[in-house]
Image (cartoon, rainbow, N blue to C red; front, side, top):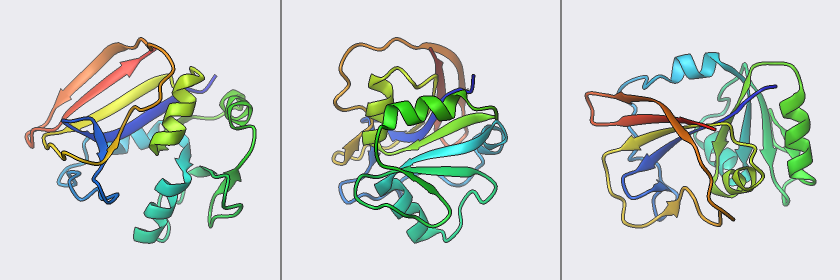
Amino acid sequence: MRKIKLNVAVSLDGLIEGPNGEYDWCFTDQDYGMKEFLDSIDTIFFGRKSYQLLIKDFSEYYPDKLKYVFSKTIKEFPNAAVISTDIINNVKRIKEQSGKDIFLFGGAEIITQLLNADLIDEMHLSIHPVILGKGKALFSGVNERKGFTLSDSKNYSSGLVQLIYKK
């Protein structure tokens, strides 16, 4: 069965975006393992807000990947299939299909739903050495304690630390 891998940038104070949705604090000076990670996946899950932000800044991002957007309000997006109902069962169905692993891009709402349904198999947290003070928390609304095991950690010259946790 395919794995769902959350891969996300997070500030030292546990935020995934600034108070106005900004992500300009994320380091882009190195690859930070993304090429290897992207080679391991063929599908990406996006929340509506994350996908809208991405396509606003980049007209075609991840062109070789199958993309799903979770949205209850918008029924169609360019270059992506939309899942608007029965999210958990649809995710389970996709997870059972053959293929490479699945990149859970975000945002926070879909991360919480999939975490609460025990569908996230790995978390790749890229901890950026910055405190934002205000913004959106990575984890909010988690129903119960979730246990993961640290499987790898990488330190980069920029001060970024990547932690990889598995179920």
